[in-house]
Image (cartoon, rainbow, N blue to C red; front, side):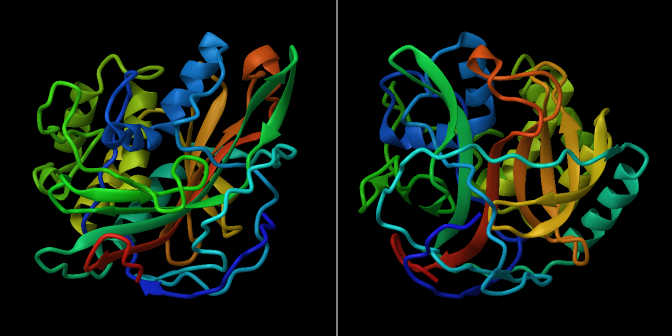
Length: 355
């Protein structure tokens, strides 16, 4: 992608291995802003639902576009370190639609997935862990983009919205937080603090994990996968695809400890249909190797992208690989439906404090 950065700053941060942010599934109409932002993390489920119902996308959902990938970075990703690329903080919303991003479809290698996930798991288990202090917040900064069908005056076309940066701050208990995201919030952002539509304090779960909740998850891969299957039963397009999606959301939208991250990768290796893809590129233009699974219902393949040398998690993308998706079948094979890159994860001393 070739965005026009509005500023340049570089920050070194530890790779996934500390505490997670808070996200949530399924947002019924009228919920508090707190729940709106949680649903944003479930872009995959929304995209499938919108396509099936052939209805316009909910403007409250986390949107991001698919423009050509950044070809150069401000720094490199090393083991235990995330380096922020230029344009990390954006307070303008230049969301003119552009052409959809396409890519070559990488060959899937089922035999190579277990060995790759074993290496990724070992690398995750050995990652350094930052020590957060009482009262600190977990800051996660990502770059994301998506493509969608746009209908104007009865005519539909496939478009992309601008690549944008999303910044979130979460308290470890999940009760306080803040979000800044062009297209979904104003320049100052929105609070994530509040109760649900019944007036109750939200209860953390797999789709909306807090630090305290993640600390209760089993780190035995078999036990962890059983829990994921049980708690996501009936969701998504089949139990295996939903389990893969749930693990991907925990990896990309929160901050698992090294031990839990390693268990998540080993659990993913046990899901039928998981494959290795030799080449993939994240939303920041970083190239790597991918662990992926094809959703047999939608024809989309979700790819988790890792540095090919360090096996550090870079991001995720979803590519249409079979059939035609979207309203009117406009999403053809080779279309990058969604792309997401993790740029910074860090502990900070307060809301709106940037590393």
